[in-house]
Length: 474
Image (spheres, rainbow, N blue to C red):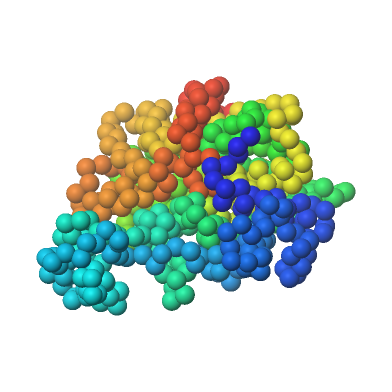
């Protein structure tokens, strides 16, 4: 059965699985020179120049699986040694150049970056080129192309540049940790750090005789679109098999947020959503003047985790979802006291398999904490619908909701830019950094168009048809 979209994801998973297996068995070594003990079957060199480079790259993958560079505040890191196969990028003359007499490329170049060889074939001096693209537009043969690295193309906020050694470089001051570059890199040279070892150690501590620690799993509603080779109820039972005391829906926190956020909107007249950590980070970094408009409510993850810890002083909370940016969110002072660890669905699959848990053989557990409106937070547009419902349920009938749902960070940028210039005809910005919403998150197992359908079906199966009824149960 195919559990992942790409072979890169599968390679990452195998490293995570083996590192986790070693940790469960108390055989994991901190000495990464001792690679043979944890080398992953099937990762022998198939594309690199030699076995030594392949194992050096594997060593770096293992480091990331063990938490990565702790001195680097960003959860997204570049494996420099693996990032050497992509072209430098920029405008290049291809073999389609016919060595014509017109030399229109040269005529339009404002920096005299063109030269011609004995066959009249054009060449671009990269030290002079300013990437204006006039030459590409002027060439009658379309012989000049603009090559962009997959990671740079994926990063819509221009947080990735190229180092002197031609490896990718992430600007932590601009990066929102959305993970788009992680998913798009065809060499797996960019990855998110994993805190899977911290989780295993937490679970093992809770197993000890006399321990009062109870580890809660808070699962994002996107889980209904993942692990489609099994039933959702079997995934819930699988989490209990791993050692989680209780499994709760982050969607319950979404219900709480929808209720509070709709009231806040009615009182203030304009706000932006606070649910997507990458969107919030983008506002703070690219549009700091709009920061006061960010909803004062915490994300659904943090909100439901706060609820859990207020009722159980022995609780440890682990968020499981599709989002790499959540790993950054839990570092914030107002969130870290409620959420202890965040992992992705990719890591959860590795955890299941590290314990040889075949979830397809398990009985179905139940997951019924949230309403329809809390669950549809997983897809773009869901939050706006929930806020509309929150206004209705709380009697704010005289408030005219004018939402704009931003599908992806580029759409977010347009809306925020309009707001900064007082040109936005909306009073609520729902910002989703990933295209499609959380169902397009970098930590998903799959990014199928059917993900939205699965989320919608799961949402409609909720026993609570209103936000209020879900909140009243707690």
